[in-house]
Image (cartoon, rainbow, N blue to C red):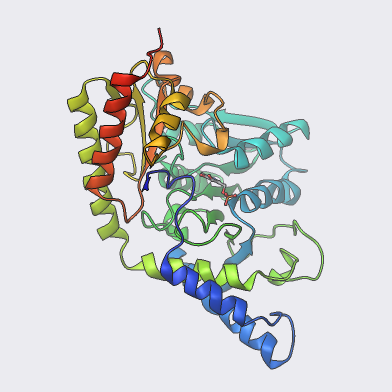
Length: 377
Ligand code: PLP
């Protein structure tokens, strides 16, 4: 199998699988006061330390969730509950994942003034545009670090630092799902009050995520119950998944620059092959992009048709974003990808284990499709 859909999900690494097994065997409830409970609690604490270390924060600022969707919902609705009664404006971007975009739609229904900042005519974001959308009546700014459809890196660090200087009480939230453990993410540098990350994008299992909440920021609890996660997120902790998450973070922690350099080479190789082909357009490239996620369009070949042709040859990619399930992506339009290329866009996303031979297999299968498949008119 040539798996090039790592922005959708990654294959869990060996370390994560072993840690999940250990978490299953250590079956006590972390809330129990006996030894079995303490052993489970110890594993959860170790994983929490690992994630905190990777984000440059303290362990008690880390809250385990069921994934980034829950983290994002908790952050957006939590900020609203914390401040949205006094202030009315909430700022986000037009290219967010639905797990942020849809909660913002809800804020609008709840009476908030929602400002969605767009990229410029070249599909590039400016920190100043995000900053300019904030005013004295703003309670929340949420912007993603890396876009899941194009790999674009948004100027969040610059925007948040400008915002915090002028409006210190505005809550800043960043969906770091596609950037975490691929590029260094530091809560301090990012000037973020809250950060969402997900396990299954970084070789850990599905169903586990983290929400970082800066100490001192009071966000009301999203799930009420037994008071786990310091009352923020009730429900018995999923010890196995938490262990898997911690192990994956540990595996990646010291290798972020080396992995980035390796994947950057793969990106260059892919783009070179696209250019050589002559009928494959690279939709987004440049300095402000992570090489892990790549959006390309194959002239006159409809995405879904190509996707299934490739699948039959053991090559797995996605059309636009996996989450949009074949729907035409509004996000790609926001990035100013020409209308003619929208129907023919596919996403090729690398893991740290991807190889040049994967790119070769992908290009060979696309070239076969170019010869055999009926073209769009
Ligand atoms: N945010 C971004 C940028 C994503 O790419 C995804 C998943 O594709 C999510 C949030 C949702 O993450 P999860 O699957 O952990 O709920």
